[in-house]
Structures are given as C-alpha cells and as structure tokens.
Image 1: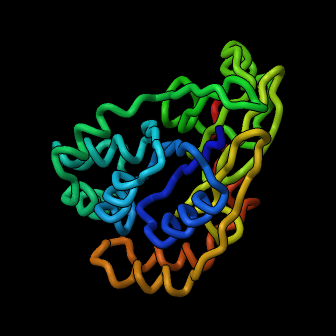
Image 2: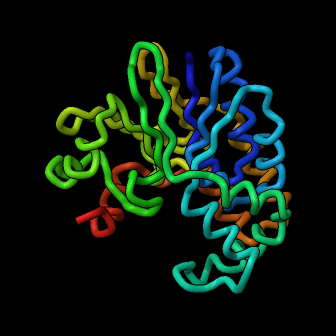
Image 3: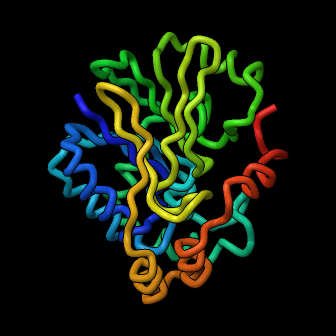
Length: 247
C-alpha cells in the first residue's frame, strides 16, 4: 500500500490541487490528511475537494481545524492572536454543519500497517496533543519518552511546517512538511510511504496561486499571498520556534 501524507494545507487550494496531481501520478492508494486543512484563504474549496476524492482518505485533527470549528460555535478569542481573529471568523463563517460534524470525528492519531515499513502512527503535532512543538533540532532526550513507548516503526507528524527525517531511540520520525504554508523554500511539501519513505516537494505556479489568493475576500489574503511567493526560511523559523518547543 502506498500512502500519501498531506499535512498543513491551510486552505491553499492551488497547492493542494498540485499535490493531488502528484499523488495520482505516484499511484498512491490511500491518503492521510494530517491536520490543519484550515484556516486559510480557500476553506470551502479545499474541504469540498478533499471530500470528493475517490482515493480512500483518512483525516486526523489539527489545532487549526479544531480552533476553526470552535470559532464557528462561539466568539473568537482565547489563544487566537488579535491580528488573526478576523481571518478566523471569516473561515468559521464558511463552515457548514457537516464540516463541524466531520472535524469533531477526526481523531488525534491514526495507525496503519504499510508494506516495507511496518506500523506507522500519524499525528499532527505529537501523539499527546495537536499543539506541541518539536523540531529537527529538539534533543532526543525530550522525545524518547513520547515516541519510544509507541512500539511503531515510524511516526509521521506535521504542525511546524518544516520537513525532516530523524531517528529517536528505536523510532523513526518524519515531518511531512506543509502543503500550503511551508517554512522553507517555496513549494508544496508532502510525503509518500510504501515501500520506503520519500519526502516530496511539488512545484506549482506560485504567481498564479498568489493571484488567486489575493482575489479572495480572506482578511489575511495579502500576507498569505506574500508567504506563498517567499516563505520564511527554515533557519529563521527554527530560531523563532526555539522558545516554543516542548520542554
């Protein structure tokens, strides 16, 4: 079984369309959507596209999905930064009852057996919650108590929008990267599993994607388009995330 891992789409429809074309070319037999389909500039379009896939698709929850669903049910506040609250309200306004029901059903983790790899556990951030931050530079000693007890051969995560491939104790951990909002070179990042592990990057028309984003009514359309064209560098993001990584 060949499994495509699509994480952190953040409602970037052009990036999702491009990755799905590559997924089909790679003849993936299953897709795992690893959280944070939302929020972003084209939430309705991305959800509808993922719902319509004729490839079996599993979803797991991301903090962005969870917070968008919460915003659809009540006032936006709490941990959502002030500058992003209008964007979150805008995403929430695009949610339909079936979206909320679907998001409520998405689990924190999913486990599959994949030929050539073994048992693979998928999570958004860590297996404990959908918000913890760890990086390719996080010390093994902080991660072994979380991941080495799982008795799986591979863990696939996302959340930090930067691909990596590392071994912690007995467990291999990959970050699939971000389809729609990478914190590394421009493009759309994902992973393909079976029989080996391949970290993939799909090139797509960035200028056209940015123009499509700017044409939406998304309150954060301008910075989102700018981020598609020139994402923050991996090194700058690693420095920024240092204080947020798990202790």
